[in-house]
Length: 247
Image (cartoon, rainbow, N blue to C red; front, side):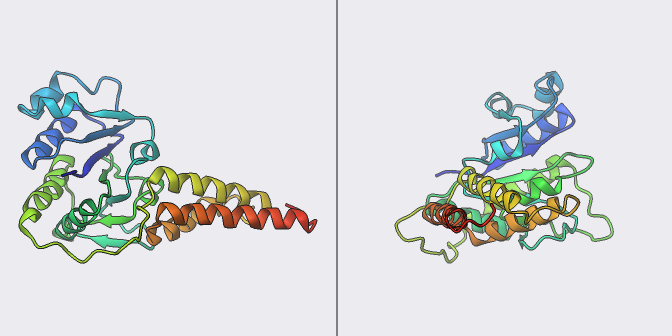
């Protein structure tokens, strides 16, 4: 059975990567992905902190961007304790674990984003996710270190093996879209929105783009639906050209 990918975005300390790897292996997780780590991340301190989870560190995959790290995934959770003022579903580690098993059960690939130790994920990272993952701890002191957060998510995943499967949505004869295909549609749509002037207000553009992307993320589109949306945008642009309407 496939398992969730653990994606550490811009981790700052090699020992924290090591302790995260240790937490992963405690819970039977081994797909570690690192986004823009420091060049010297794989050093003795990482192996010492991993305390025997060397194979997780040695098999880790490094990516330049968060988008590249999630490109092959269908559903992504983003861990954050802060209100991002985005319209997204919110899971706890327990509800997320159950949802992950349901998604994997129908052939989807899933992953969880964890941000830098000091600042957490940036809003553009969170926008790439379908669901927020928030750990319900003391609201007066909600600070968790990286390994603690990985362990909480991994533990709930490990324990959820004994729970009955939740309800799942039928997707017909087409599978869920990967993040790579979704990103391709975003690029297409935003290119045309720039061309027609919809995103012309420079200071508002980043927020507008995030809102549009979050809207489509919530739809949980299939591969076929992505193709349909590409076709809709293409025909709208083509029709405007035929009518002599400025692009």
